[in-house]
Amino acid sequence: MLSLENLVVKYGNVEALHGIDMEVAEGEIVSVLGANGAGKSTTLMGISGLVKPASGSIVFEGTPIHTLPAHKIVEMGIAQVPEGRRVFGTLTVSENLRLGAFTSRDRNRDARTRDWIFSLFPILKERRRQLAGTLSGGEQQMLAIGRALMAHPRLLLLDEPSLGLAPLIIKAIFETIREINSSGVTVVLVEQNARAALRLAHRGYVLEVGKVVLADTAESLLANPEIHSAYLGHGA
Image 1 (spheres, helix red, strand yellow):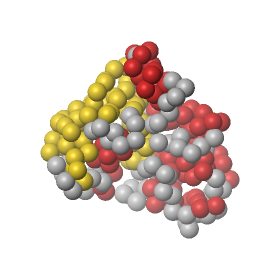
Image 2 (cartoon, one colour):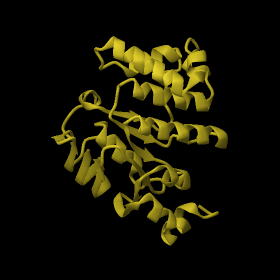
Image 3 (tube, helix red, strand yellow):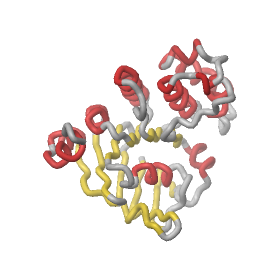
Image 4 (spheres, one colour):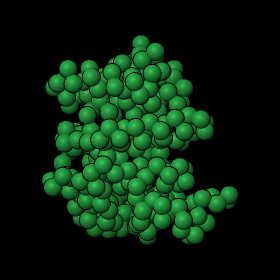
């Protein structure tokens, strides 16, 4: 479904990604792990067109997308949930969701998707007239995911969905991600909570300073002593 080949991304003279290769098959949850500064968020922003590669390619369902503007990539079926949620705080929950469907021309489909989102996150239906800025952190994360789903993505990019949330909320968010995937949406998950991410994912990639250093099944990565020491131990 998605292929990154020899992808190089630079910020000015600083090279953030040093020629990474990555593949995502339809129906998978693929986790991207790594320390802060490893290039995880840059990878997602490259896929969604928010940063342009210096070289290399990104191919989605057989079509190169690395030269396309971000809104065209959304129209093709890729949506991103950004780190930090970035909801529009002065707009209501319903208005935030409508903004997620800005590329859609099918209002009936939008209504069905909104109802599905409300079934995934019932609290959003209760708070649909409430300003997003007054929601709790967990509710804002639910809204950010719902806003991305309003674009009817076939590929959903999630950047640190558990950041700053309480354990019970994290568990609920991850269960919902599994449900979204079961509905037919492929997921790429960037997540500091490596154990939870690998328990959810089918496969994983490990980035270090802009390079892929490990790629394996999630089960194998969970059992890998190096991964356990670096990301799953008490000191991680």
